[in-house]
Length: 147
Image (tube, rainbow, N blue to C red; front, top):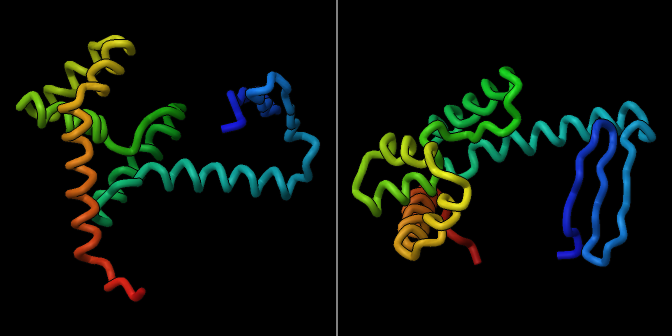
């Protein structure tokens, strides 16, 4: 990957490249139409990401509502799943506790401890198994592959 980091300012996006050069984009320099399209694209991406991994329309709509509520409350970082996501589900499965109990414990942990838990092989396997189970549900509903 060539981009080492993106820094978002009030009206700028700066790309700090791995070769230590940078490119700064000032959004004010673009027409109102382009700025509006970029805003709409950003919202579309953000809201679309909210229901990634959902296995039903109902679940997707619930996840979308969680993010919309967060945005309306000024919270850009709210995730589209109120249960804590796949990592929490995987941890709960491995430890043998409820998702709610796993989420409560997760919220008490430091960022370093969270990273360590997510690197545990049992948690990684459980997460992959959840992904496979969800993919199977989608596959059952999909049209046959015409290859």
